[in-house]
Image 1 (cartoon, rainbow, N blue to C red):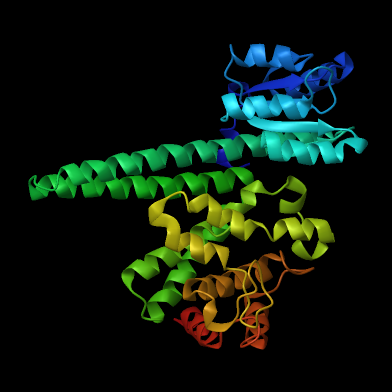
Image 2 (cartoon, rainbow, N blue to C red; image 1 turned 180 degrees about the vertical axis):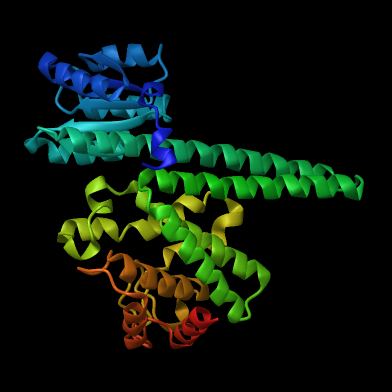
Length: 356
């Protein structure tokens, strides 16, 4: 098991379950307590709000249909007053329209149908915690970066040594943000981080062979390292199933991870170039990719590079095929798609990078 999973301590997180049926609350309390979470329960929206005023809750799980204050109304209150609390909804088969309303009004993270599967619900809760951790890290780093930039503006007339010192602080914050994102990737699925490191290294090698600037090479390296960051928002089922085996609805969810990755990184000003590469790293040269169906040179050069290297890695891991490919077979597949799925110029550089 990875070090990141070993460090996940459920006892550090408080879960509030809200339902007007005592047997449902009992089942949720038993499941979550066995997992090690701190569990609180409330039989109404009013009780839940009173408890939230006293406790810092990590995740709230609310039933949809409750008297006086339903789940949509409750989670809308929670979103407004305690936005840092992740919001989940339990719905019956007839409550789907209400769940959609709750997504809009209560900004819920995800809804789960009754009766739930314990393993899937636990996975959703852990995913919500990971998402909240990342969001909080975003806010912290954004505030830190803003404060440091303001500090630099105030120090324009100071000694050069002071300016250099603050510049080093900013770089340290930038590196810290990259490490934080990488750790979240590994927490979500352990094999994503080594895969991403391999993509980053070979992508940067290609970027240097292409004669790109140092800044472009750095952006392409970071994009390779974080290209799968949007996958933290996918369900465990989608994340752990090969793409070719996903049903249509799940495949559609999978295709959202590029845009989610861009949205995640766009909150950091210095990451906008990286975010653009991540958004387009599943675009194909012939325009059949996603999310924007870009074609040819409309695809950012960094995305054309990362697309090639990721395909090479995933052919070998078997993520995009029924069986794993050898490195030589993976190269043959890529060459057979030169000019269709992959940029011809970048494909030639890819072969050169492998041989170098």
